[in-house]
Image 1 (cartoon, helix red, strand yellow):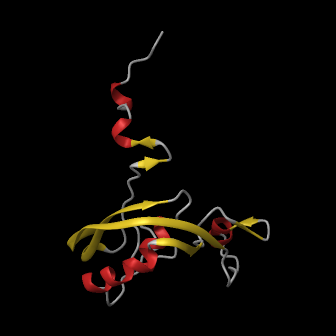
Image 2 (cartoon, helix red, strand yellow):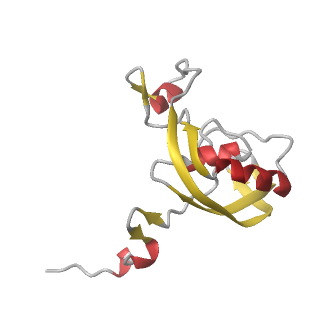
Length: 148
């Protein structure tokens, strides 16, 4: 699947070929360490004083050279790579290869761009840590009681 937003929110298009597990595994080391990431068209980064996502949604001509951001990816662990049935609003149900991985990265890393660079789109994102805040240390919002 391909999308200009690099995720499931944009217009989706089925593609003919998908990278194999071996191809994805071979690509991963290229993204670990200090890397430069081109910011996606659908981002809040400003070019010529305008946010890229506003330009993209407005059908305006997009810059050819996107700004580049330096980020660090400390590690990528593949948890699963298997064919799954994925429901799409426009395309119906499709059997597609789905990669599930754990990415340890610096703040500001575009995970949608990483998904695109590995050959797909971002299907789901779950942040487990932001700075010093870790999901396991958090309270369940629905179980919290108001204080008087």
